[in-house]
Image (cartoon, rainbow, N blue to C red; front, top):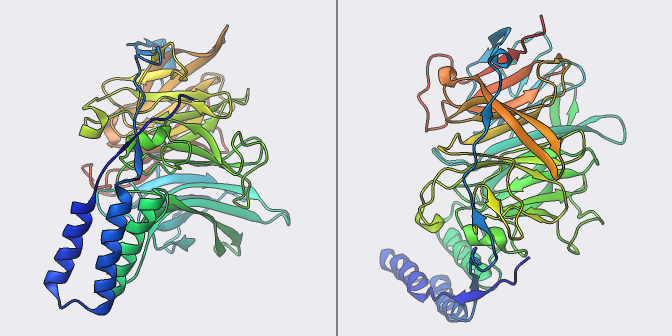
Length: 451
């Protein structure tokens, strides 16, 4: 990890402007006067605080390169069928399967829906969570996975973004001041919007006993991440995006732009590379999908830059990454896409133009035609199959093909179903698509060699 430089950024004008606007709208109460003084003090302290500087790629000896991937033989593209399982969903984000044949689907506005073993969608939700996810945002109720508890009862874990619910204007203003001050002294604290991991028990067909397992991960309107899976080691993995603050992805003390690993109770496992830190991998932008190869490597998809000024106006270069070692650095925002040289892990696959990878599944079914395949659902690029192989230096991508084009619009999720098929979810009601009748929906895709 390169030594992190810093620079000071003054923000007193911003604090003063906010305080002045509040005082202009109503007579200054004693609390408001105290808050204004606190803002001035915080602004003065801010002058001595430092913000991370992104290291220079040339100084690190790393270069971005252009790569291409061959198309797989045309026979591999054939499908037995594509059929709609359920429809009428509201931005389905992820799905998990239960041992009794039910499936649980997260809807981004905050509901966990149930698809019964007979394929019907239960009208009432399995559970509801008061998430924060305004229209057009990249946050809300996100990833989901399950595990068997110590008593044999199924436990369901989800990632969700929440926000302070204070309604009183004066209290809300003072809370905002407190958060500003907290961020001055510790940029990881004082965020109104945070990412949580919440656990439930599945009991009598309902989600009960909700409890927050992981709390306080700073989140934002954009680049919220949210991928969640239990690994083969039994530990909990989740991804938090950079929150549109790219430099923090390279800052070890920040939880932004990271893949994080926890014990099932939310504590930090003893094998972590940094004491008391859940950091598993750094240098990611907006990871929404995680899965594992049979050899133990973690795969992660990451959205490439979209031309934001903070991203140096770069575009494209979506990624499929393999993380073989704890503490790996995937490079964002120093580099994006494939690289040579330097300390960063280069992705297995990059896509330019962007496909907006949102779902990931390593195929584990009985189909020989899809054996060794990795499926990536793209909000722009349909459903893609990538064939991986092990080379002398590790895993390499051999070829890819488009299994399902954009006929159904934006594709958000993909997951192995118990019967050897794939479930794929659309995301046409997320504020960026063109919803059609009965959207959103879950599709079942059968491989070519299964009946």
